[in-house]
Length: 142
Image (cartoon, rainbow, N blue to C red; front, side, top):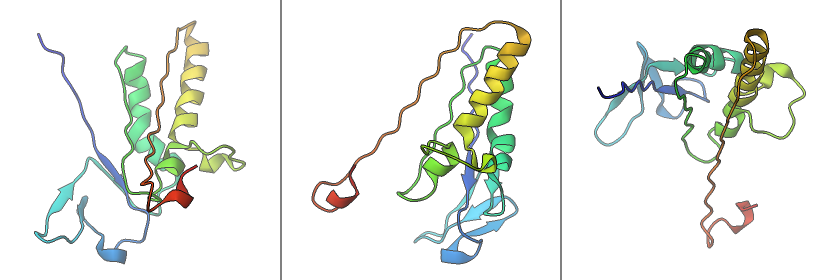
């Protein structure tokens, strides 16, 4: 029997709805393009949502599944400067705990739960892919 695959999609709108043509209508995101497509996501998170809201609504259920021995993946995709690093929480130092992103929140919950339930072997992998166009964005490459 083939394994079941569950995929959920979420979108986090950084700017206010209506700005730059982004509209949220009944959980559907409308971004004007040449053919007027509408995209539906399992989770639509507006700019009023906090980092904790994003984690609680989208990733926290995956931690429970992780402890049921399911593989879990969070994939962040978007334009440069769209908020992926902030949302995932991979900035070097966060002084305000409310601004913690997904990765530190997952680690905190997993370690706490592992300590409460006994010992676990934990393997985590993380990759961030950056590509800079050599001729156009030399100043942006680090």
